[in-house]
Length: 359
Image (cartoon, rainbow, N blue to C red; front, side):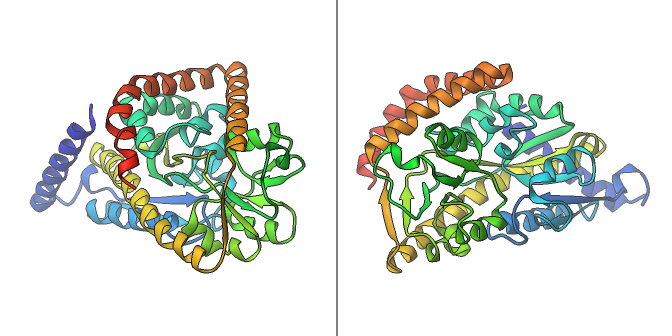
Protein backbone atom coordinates (compact mmCIF):
# COMPACT_ATOMS: atom_id res chain seq x y z
CA UNK A 1 0.00 0.00 0.00
CA UNK A 2 1.54 3.34 -1.03
CA UNK A 3 1.81 6.33 1.30
CA UNK A 4 -1.16 8.27 -0.15
CA UNK A 5 -3.49 5.28 0.18
CA UNK A 6 -2.33 4.76 3.76
CA UNK A 7 -2.98 8.40 4.57
CA UNK A 8 -6.48 8.32 3.06
CA UNK A 9 -7.25 5.12 4.96
CA UNK A 10 -5.99 6.77 8.15
CA UNK A 11 -8.31 9.75 7.69
CA UNK A 12 -11.23 7.44 6.97
CA UNK A 13 -10.52 5.41 10.11
CA UNK A 14 -10.43 8.60 12.21
CA UNK A 15 -13.80 9.71 10.82
CA UNK A 16 -15.36 6.30 11.44
CA UNK A 17 -13.88 6.15 14.93
CA UNK A 18 -15.38 9.55 15.68
CA UNK A 19 -18.77 8.32 14.50
CA UNK A 20 -18.51 5.24 16.70
CA UNK A 21 -17.59 7.34 19.70
CA UNK A 22 -20.48 9.75 19.08
CA UNK A 23 -22.92 6.81 18.98
CA UNK A 24 -21.07 5.63 22.05
CA UNK A 25 -21.85 2.32 23.48
CA UNK A 26 -19.00 3.35 25.76
CA UNK A 27 -17.58 -0.14 25.70
CA UNK A 28 -15.65 -2.45 23.41
CA UNK A 29 -12.22 -2.59 21.83
CA UNK A 30 -12.51 0.87 20.17
CA UNK A 31 -12.47 2.49 23.62
CA UNK A 32 -9.57 0.52 25.11
CA UNK A 33 -6.81 2.74 26.49
CA UNK A 34 -3.16 1.81 25.84
CA UNK A 35 -0.48 3.31 28.09
CA UNK A 36 2.95 3.14 26.52
CA UNK A 37 6.51 4.22 27.28
CA UNK A 38 8.82 5.85 24.69
CA UNK A 39 12.54 5.79 25.50
CA UNK A 40 15.11 7.82 23.58
CA UNK A 41 18.87 7.77 23.08
CA UNK A 42 18.95 11.56 23.51
CA UNK A 43 19.59 13.61 26.64
CA UNK A 44 16.24 14.55 28.25
CA UNK A 45 14.46 17.36 26.36
CA UNK A 46 17.21 17.58 23.72
CA UNK A 47 16.17 20.35 21.30
CA UNK A 48 14.49 19.10 18.13
CA UNK A 49 14.87 15.34 18.74
CA UNK A 50 13.71 15.12 22.35
CA UNK A 51 11.17 17.89 21.90
CA UNK A 52 9.79 16.22 18.77
CA UNK A 53 9.12 13.01 20.68
CA UNK A 54 7.22 14.93 23.35
CA UNK A 55 5.11 16.52 20.61
CA UNK A 56 4.65 13.18 18.87
CA UNK A 57 3.37 11.65 22.12
CA UNK A 58 0.99 14.56 22.63
CA UNK A 59 -0.39 14.19 19.11
CA UNK A 60 -0.86 10.44 19.48
CA UNK A 61 -2.96 11.01 22.60
CA UNK A 62 -4.94 13.89 21.11
CA UNK A 63 -5.76 12.30 17.76
CA UNK A 64 -6.60 8.96 19.38
CA UNK A 65 -9.04 10.72 21.75
CA UNK A 66 -6.96 9.56 24.72
CA UNK A 67 -6.83 5.91 23.66
CA UNK A 68 -3.03 5.91 23.19
CA UNK A 69 -1.13 7.61 26.01
CA UNK A 70 2.67 7.74 25.64
CA UNK A 71 5.13 8.83 28.33
CA UNK A 72 8.51 9.97 26.97
CA UNK A 73 11.80 9.23 28.77
CA UNK A 74 15.11 10.80 27.81
CA UNK A 75 18.28 8.74 27.76
CA UNK A 76 19.07 7.51 31.27
CA UNK A 77 15.68 8.36 32.77
CA UNK A 78 14.30 4.84 32.42
CA UNK A 79 17.14 2.92 30.73
CA UNK A 80 20.63 3.97 29.57
CA UNK A 81 20.54 5.61 26.13
CA UNK A 82 22.46 2.87 24.34
CA UNK A 83 20.27 0.15 25.82
CA UNK A 84 16.91 1.31 24.47
CA UNK A 85 17.00 -1.18 21.57
CA UNK A 86 16.93 -4.09 24.01
CA UNK A 87 14.45 -2.30 26.27
CA UNK A 88 11.89 -2.02 23.47
CA UNK A 89 12.67 -5.47 22.10
CA UNK A 90 12.10 -6.97 25.56
CA UNK A 91 8.94 -4.94 26.26
CA UNK A 92 10.35 -2.75 29.05
CA UNK A 93 9.12 0.10 26.83
CA UNK A 94 6.92 -0.06 23.76
CA UNK A 95 8.68 2.58 21.63
CA UNK A 96 12.15 4.02 21.12
CA UNK A 97 13.70 6.92 19.21
CA UNK A 98 17.32 6.86 18.12
CA UNK A 99 19.45 6.29 15.06
CA UNK A 100 20.05 2.75 13.95
CA UNK A 101 23.85 2.65 13.71
CA UNK A 102 24.00 2.36 17.50
CA UNK A 103 22.78 -1.24 17.13
CA UNK A 104 25.53 -2.49 14.81
CA UNK A 105 26.70 -4.99 17.44
CA UNK A 106 23.24 -6.59 17.52
CA UNK A 107 22.24 -6.20 13.86
CA UNK A 108 25.24 -5.26 11.68
CA UNK A 109 23.11 -4.17 8.73
CA UNK A 110 21.34 -1.59 10.90
CA UNK A 111 24.06 0.94 10.07
CA UNK A 112 22.80 1.25 6.49
CA UNK A 113 19.42 2.56 7.64
CA UNK A 114 21.07 5.47 9.41
CA UNK A 115 23.93 6.82 7.29
CA UNK A 116 26.55 5.56 4.86
CA UNK A 117 29.77 7.54 4.32
CA UNK A 118 29.60 9.35 0.98
CA UNK A 119 26.18 7.74 0.56
CA UNK A 120 22.63 9.04 0.20
CA UNK A 121 21.54 12.49 1.32
CA UNK A 122 18.27 13.08 3.21
CA UNK A 123 16.06 13.26 0.14
CA UNK A 124 17.65 10.19 -1.38
CA UNK A 125 17.41 8.25 1.89
CA UNK A 126 13.70 8.99 2.17
CA UNK A 127 13.13 8.01 -1.45
CA UNK A 128 15.05 4.75 -1.07
CA UNK A 129 13.24 3.90 2.17
CA UNK A 130 9.71 4.73 1.04
CA UNK A 131 9.88 3.92 -2.67
CA UNK A 132 13.05 1.92 -3.27
CA UNK A 133 12.51 -1.09 -1.03
CA UNK A 134 14.67 0.12 1.86
CA UNK A 135 11.92 0.16 4.47
CA UNK A 136 10.88 -3.41 3.65
CA UNK A 137 14.46 -4.56 4.25
CA UNK A 138 14.60 -2.59 7.49
CA UNK A 139 11.36 -4.23 8.64
CA UNK A 140 12.79 -7.66 7.76
CA UNK A 141 15.93 -7.00 9.80
CA UNK A 142 14.12 -5.64 12.86
CA UNK A 143 11.50 -8.39 12.84
CA UNK A 144 14.29 -10.71 14.03
CA UNK A 145 14.44 -8.58 17.18
CA UNK A 146 10.69 -8.24 17.70
CA UNK A 147 10.61 -4.65 16.44
CA UNK A 148 8.90 -2.55 13.79
CA UNK A 149 10.92 0.45 12.46
CA UNK A 150 9.69 3.76 11.06
CA UNK A 151 11.80 6.58 9.60
CA UNK A 152 11.32 9.48 11.99
CA UNK A 153 13.68 12.35 11.25
CA UNK A 154 16.85 13.15 9.36
CA UNK A 155 19.77 15.39 10.23
CA UNK A 156 20.60 16.35 6.67
CA UNK A 157 24.29 16.63 5.84
CA UNK A 158 26.21 16.88 9.10
CA UNK A 159 29.41 18.72 9.96
CA UNK A 160 32.69 16.83 9.91
CA UNK A 161 33.48 17.31 13.59
CA UNK A 162 35.47 19.20 16.21
CA UNK A 163 39.24 18.77 16.45
CA UNK A 164 42.01 20.17 18.59
CA UNK A 165 44.52 19.76 15.79
CA UNK A 166 44.42 20.51 12.10
CA UNK A 167 43.66 17.79 9.57
CA UNK A 168 45.92 18.39 6.58
CA UNK A 169 46.38 14.82 5.39
CA UNK A 170 44.93 11.37 6.09
CA UNK A 171 47.97 10.72 8.31
CA UNK A 172 46.61 13.23 10.83
CA UNK A 173 43.97 10.66 11.82
CA UNK A 174 46.64 8.25 13.05
CA UNK A 175 46.43 7.87 16.81
CA UNK A 176 43.38 10.16 16.97
CA UNK A 177 40.68 9.17 19.47
CA UNK A 178 37.38 10.34 18.05
CA UNK A 179 33.78 9.94 19.11
CA UNK A 180 32.20 8.73 15.87
CA UNK A 181 29.79 5.76 15.61
CA UNK A 182 28.61 3.65 12.70
CA UNK A 183 30.48 3.04 9.48
CA UNK A 184 32.21 6.41 9.86
CA UNK A 185 33.85 5.11 13.03
CA UNK A 186 35.12 2.05 11.18
CA UNK A 187 36.66 4.34 8.58
CA UNK A 188 38.48 6.36 11.24
CA UNK A 189 39.82 3.12 12.70
CA UNK A 190 41.03 2.01 9.28
CA UNK A 191 42.78 5.37 8.92
CA UNK A 192 44.76 4.59 12.06
CA UNK A 193 42.60 6.33 14.64
CA UNK A 194 40.41 4.99 17.43
CA UNK A 195 36.63 5.29 17.10
CA UNK A 196 34.67 5.69 20.32
CA UNK A 197 30.90 5.36 20.66
CA UNK A 198 29.37 7.22 23.59
CA UNK A 199 25.89 8.64 24.15
CA UNK A 200 25.28 12.31 23.49
CA UNK A 201 25.16 13.30 27.12
CA UNK A 202 28.74 12.11 27.68
CA UNK A 203 30.45 13.68 24.66
CA UNK A 204 31.28 17.11 26.09
CA UNK A 205 32.82 15.70 29.27
CA UNK A 206 34.91 13.18 27.34
CA UNK A 207 36.25 15.86 25.01
CA UNK A 208 36.90 18.32 27.82
CA UNK A 209 38.83 15.75 29.88
CA UNK A 210 40.86 14.47 26.94
CA UNK A 211 39.26 11.03 26.90
CA UNK A 212 38.77 11.75 23.21
CA UNK A 213 40.70 14.11 20.91
CA UNK A 214 37.86 14.91 18.55
CA UNK A 215 34.14 14.42 18.13
CA UNK A 216 31.37 14.67 15.62
CA UNK A 217 27.83 15.23 16.84
CA UNK A 218 25.23 16.62 14.47
CA UNK A 219 25.43 20.17 13.12
CA UNK A 220 25.91 23.81 14.15
CA UNK A 221 22.68 24.08 16.17
CA UNK A 222 23.21 21.11 18.46
CA UNK A 223 26.99 21.52 18.50
CA UNK A 224 26.62 25.11 19.73
CA UNK A 225 24.12 24.05 22.37
CA UNK A 226 26.54 21.34 23.52
CA UNK A 227 29.29 23.96 23.88
CA UNK A 228 31.91 22.19 21.78
CA UNK A 229 33.19 25.54 20.48
CA UNK A 230 34.41 26.30 24.00
CA UNK A 231 36.71 23.27 24.21
CA UNK A 232 37.74 22.46 20.62
CA UNK A 233 39.78 24.61 18.27
CA UNK A 234 38.75 23.58 14.75
CA UNK A 235 35.32 22.85 13.26
CA UNK A 236 35.53 20.84 10.03
CA UNK A 237 33.13 20.21 7.16
CA UNK A 238 31.63 18.45 5.23
CA UNK A 239 30.09 15.54 7.11
CA UNK A 240 31.42 12.86 4.77
CA UNK A 241 30.41 10.18 7.28
CA UNK A 242 26.72 11.15 7.52
CA UNK A 243 25.40 12.92 4.43
CA UNK A 244 21.80 12.24 5.46
CA UNK A 245 21.42 10.45 8.78
CA UNK A 246 17.96 8.98 9.35
CA UNK A 247 16.58 8.79 12.86
CA UNK A 248 14.15 6.04 13.74
CA UNK A 249 11.03 5.36 15.74
CA UNK A 250 10.96 1.67 16.55
CA UNK A 251 8.08 -0.15 18.20
CA UNK A 252 7.76 -3.46 20.01
CA UNK A 253 6.23 -5.73 17.36
CA UNK A 254 3.89 -7.62 19.69
CA UNK A 255 2.64 -4.40 21.25
CA UNK A 256 2.15 -2.83 17.83
CA UNK A 257 0.21 -5.79 16.50
CA UNK A 258 -1.94 -5.69 19.65
CA UNK A 259 -3.22 -2.24 18.73
CA UNK A 260 -6.40 -1.64 16.71
CA UNK A 261 -5.64 -0.91 13.07
CA UNK A 262 -6.46 2.79 13.36
CA UNK A 263 -3.87 3.24 16.12
CA UNK A 264 -1.26 1.33 14.14
CA UNK A 265 -1.88 3.66 11.23
CA UNK A 266 -1.81 6.67 13.54
CA UNK A 267 1.71 5.76 14.72
CA UNK A 268 2.90 5.22 11.15
CA UNK A 269 1.43 8.49 9.93
CA UNK A 270 2.70 10.54 12.87
CA UNK A 271 6.21 9.11 12.45
CA UNK A 272 6.00 10.09 8.77
CA UNK A 273 5.12 13.65 9.77
CA UNK A 274 8.04 14.00 12.17
CA UNK A 275 10.39 12.48 9.63
CA UNK A 276 9.84 15.73 7.71
CA UNK A 277 9.46 18.10 10.67
CA UNK A 278 12.79 17.19 12.27
CA UNK A 279 14.69 17.69 9.02
CA UNK A 280 13.03 21.06 8.40
CA UNK A 281 13.77 22.29 11.92
CA UNK A 282 17.43 21.30 11.67
CA UNK A 283 17.87 22.90 8.25
CA UNK A 284 16.60 26.18 9.66
CA UNK A 285 18.46 26.12 12.97
CA UNK A 286 21.76 24.97 11.48
CA UNK A 287 21.78 27.97 9.15
CA UNK A 288 21.23 30.34 12.09
CA UNK A 289 23.81 28.73 14.35
CA UNK A 290 26.51 28.37 11.74
CA UNK A 291 26.47 32.15 11.51
CA UNK A 292 26.56 32.42 15.31
CA UNK A 293 29.66 30.23 15.42
CA UNK A 294 31.30 32.38 12.75
CA UNK A 295 30.40 35.55 14.66
CA UNK A 296 32.03 34.12 17.78
CA UNK A 297 35.29 33.48 15.94
CA UNK A 298 35.18 29.70 15.57
CA UNK A 299 37.73 28.42 13.04
CA UNK A 300 35.61 26.63 10.44
CA UNK A 301 37.68 24.62 7.97
CA UNK A 302 36.98 22.40 4.98
CA UNK A 303 38.66 19.00 4.85
CA UNK A 304 41.30 19.10 2.10
CA UNK A 305 40.31 17.32 -1.10
CA UNK A 306 43.07 14.74 -0.66
CA UNK A 307 41.68 13.86 2.77
CA UNK A 308 38.15 13.42 1.39
CA UNK A 309 39.46 11.26 -1.45
CA UNK A 310 41.33 9.05 1.03
CA UNK A 311 38.32 8.82 3.35
CA UNK A 312 36.11 7.79 0.43
CA UNK A 313 38.55 5.05 -0.56
CA UNK A 314 38.70 3.77 3.02
CA UNK A 315 34.88 3.93 3.23
CA UNK A 316 34.59 1.67 0.21
CA UNK A 317 36.94 -0.82 1.84
CA UNK A 318 34.98 -0.78 5.12
CA UNK A 319 31.66 -1.32 3.35
CA UNK A 320 33.07 -4.13 1.21
CA UNK A 321 34.43 -5.90 4.30
CA UNK A 322 31.11 -5.63 6.11
CA UNK A 323 29.15 -6.91 3.13
CA UNK A 324 31.52 -9.86 2.86
CA UNK A 325 31.12 -10.77 6.53
CA UNK A 326 27.35 -10.18 6.77
CA UNK A 327 25.10 -11.39 3.92
CA UNK A 328 22.18 -9.22 4.97
CA UNK A 329 24.38 -6.12 4.88
CA UNK A 330 25.32 -7.08 1.32
CA UNK A 331 21.63 -7.42 0.43
CA UNK A 332 20.79 -4.00 1.90
CA UNK A 333 23.76 -2.23 0.35
CA UNK A 334 22.99 -3.71 -3.07
CA UNK A 335 19.44 -2.37 -2.79
CA UNK A 336 20.80 1.06 -1.87
CA UNK A 337 23.29 1.08 -4.73
CA UNK A 338 20.72 -0.18 -7.25
CA UNK A 339 18.46 2.69 -6.23
CA UNK A 340 21.31 5.18 -6.49
CA UNK A 341 22.19 3.95 -9.97
CA UNK A 342 18.59 4.07 -11.17
CA UNK A 343 18.22 7.63 -9.86
CA UNK A 344 21.53 8.88 -11.27
CA UNK A 345 20.21 10.11 -14.62
CA UNK A 346 17.37 12.03 -13.02
CA UNK A 347 19.65 13.53 -10.35
CA UNK A 348 22.06 14.69 -13.03
CA UNK A 349 19.32 16.38 -15.02
CA UNK A 350 17.21 17.74 -12.17
CA UNK A 351 19.64 18.41 -9.32
CA UNK A 352 23.27 18.57 -10.40
CA UNK A 353 22.55 20.79 -13.38
CA UNK A 354 20.76 23.44 -11.32
CA UNK A 355 22.83 23.25 -8.11
CA UNK A 356 25.58 25.72 -9.17
CA UNK A 357 22.89 28.34 -9.86
CA UNK A 358 21.17 27.97 -6.50
CA UNK A 359 24.05 29.48 -4.53
